[in-house]
Image 1 (cartoon, chains in turn cyan, orange):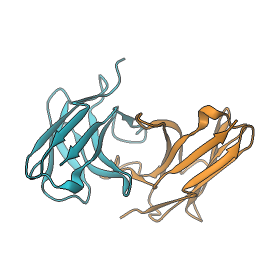
Image 2: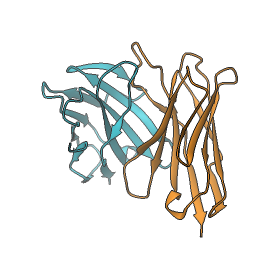
Image 3: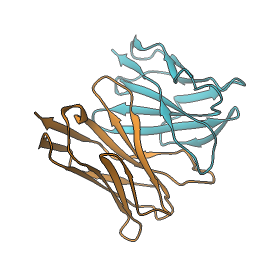
Image 4: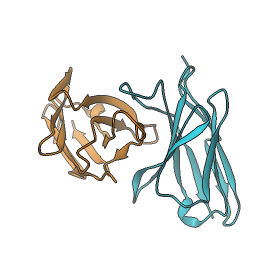
Length: 114
Length: 115
């Protein structure tokens, strides 16, 4: 099976712009989670989607949003970009929700905000 | 919310030695504890995990122990090899219910195995 894929892999934006990142989970996986990774804060949970519904949300401002489509693909959007939004954005997919919750990560999208 | 502390932040060992990384968590309801390995420029990869109904789990040179009472868990790597060099992250989450997949990560340990 193909692994989790993310597009684009690299992105450069300027302050005030908005950006949309895409994640395709492993075939059959219905849960998609998003994480922000920075050198200072490490890996921080953004949100989780399952069956097109946001089920959990981390402590990020409303500028960060996401959605999931019927084929389980997910997108996240960041509006009004700030310099501090520069990070590696990782998505992870899981087969089911419940006891067996192994998450498999994609390669990430490296966002640089100038 | 959950808070996960990880120590040490850096660890340097000689090839063949053992390495131990320790994590503590704050939420007693957490019951799923995965460990991820992230090589430079690559995605985090799950290397081992443990659930709260188990005290220890082994997979070849890697083992994880869990002490629910003290709320800490540890990663043990024996007979380390240069290819074990990477950043290791511990994480914790609740295994069922609303916060199922909200993994809270430690800050990571940079392990360097010197040949």
